[in-house]
Length: 309
Image 1 (cartoon, rainbow, N blue to C red):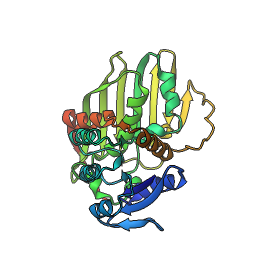
Image 2 (cartoon, rainbow, N blue to C red):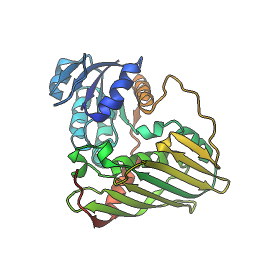
Image 3 (cartoon, rainbow, N blue to C red):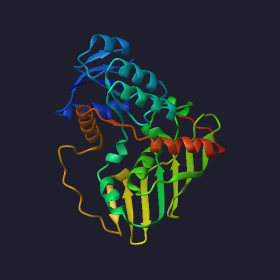
């Protein structure tokens, strides 16, 4: 299937372009970006022009920042195209619900992607936790914003969600692997004095079985980066490391699964999108975004030192 990639920035170049190129399902037929392009691929600077001139392109993958994404997704759906959304799927829950309604009305596929759910050992963690009694779950997600978002000022503006940009990856894993849903009960959000979004966050959750569930996100980490989830149960301890790439159960690392044709987070996402288009399916799980929205509603704000690149 022919696909257009919209927003040629770091994530598109690092993940989307090679995943599409390696897939037998997809043909990257066009890009839309004000500044970037892909060698050998027809490029546009205007999205409406691409939609008008390329009716043969059935699918659009949006890699734009969250705030402008709704307008592009809505235009694509009105034009009868299937849509794939980078995470988070939108700037608000309401606009995501509106897009889903449009997709259903037009009988089009819509996919809110959560790439961290496709990390190598996440599925095993979910299977291990099924049926076990959780007593404590601790999330520690600390990274260096300068390394992962160099010069990207949009992350500090309203709708950019700040430290929740990586933190929502952790929440996407938690909402997948826990057998029972949790909801936020409190949060502390640390805002740099010169920025509109938080640089750190501490979250507390209610678990229906009484387990203690908490998360800590921080964008000021230097040196080694930390993406860890520890689940303590009545019958053992599970630890996901490196964002779900490594798994330890009761101090031992189970054998890693063999590499397959869909090895990697983004190749698996594009394979999923191909299946959705083939069946006319929609996957708009918004649970991770709901936790972020709740954090902004319930969070206590604390001011911290200004952030400068």
